[in-house]
Length: 253
Length: 264
Image (cartoon, rainbow over all chains, first blue to last red):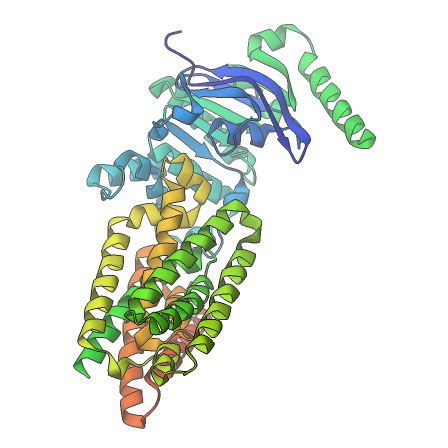
């Protein structure tokens, strides 16, 4: 392992209107790692992702990207981010290819037009997620699953070193989900891409992750798949405990 | 008439381009708000003896900055920010007009447009303003497209979204002022929005949306001016009504296409 972590949370906490959403979370992601961020609905997974890419600022603790504090970080093209399916824009008058090309904007810099090599990277990204045949389709005409693949292509087009995926398989059928996971694993092996994959579908995804983070506002477990595997049923107990505490706190609130 | 035509063409091309970014970001009414703020600027210019388009530009830009400041402060109250600036502008305009004690007839030229009385100075100001807006929008095309698609993704791409948001509203203010003499304060938002709405009925890409919007904007100005000349109508109103007709036509074409089973 060499160099600083690509993403590091250090005792990060965040509250919405006084309610704690993320509490004292510390974890880090190294190059080439495939990290599953697992937790029930409302456990703070999306918030943690938004904290990781600077869309939210933690009230306490710190976030570092590629060794630099978030406030000083400027190398955004090194990061790819796919938000939840809620980001879909029905009726937006742009083709799939035009949307994916926005993934190159950060690499090119202000005032510069996208070049032929940018176009090549866009086509490559579309190919990799199987959306090339849809490149001239309007983005609003796609299904939820297709839209997520376009968003993934958009992120990949920027040739990131760290990819943060927030429920990328929402609305995607089982076959497409496995294809997506295999693609991410291949990219990790071929390009040393680090992936943080947010989901609550633990069982399907478990074989793909080499590190697992179990979150329910607090981090309940963070370690390798093997660490977790040595302890029979520990992840299930942890998730059940998380769900129980979630339920209890909501009732108590 | 030549000056009117040139001014109309510049405005007809510029308004829809900035309008595309406004409509897609659900800021369609910002042109209306800035038009009303510029009314205060025109009135202040009359009162102070300053060239009215200059004072209108100063007020509109200040209004634009205020709207964006309020909007970025509390995003969920974006329309409230617009309303605050909108009514402050028109109230100030009314008060300043009443202070002058003489409702100058020329003020109506700004309220309803007076393209046929465009002076050489007006034409220069309109051309420089419109040309600058088009040049900046062309240079920042990819950044503004990304921002229009998703502001969060634009931020994570490293784009200076705060700066770009302010730039869009300031360019809107400049465009509104450039269009004042052509369609007037009360109708300026129509030229920002209606050609875009027509374009959205037919376009199958973002590039096509921009192209059709410019086409419909320029066509509305040319045909509107022609109608005004032939039927002795108010040019500003004729231009906007022509834009509405192009929208209805585009909607019909889309409807026919859909009935024939063509995917639109």
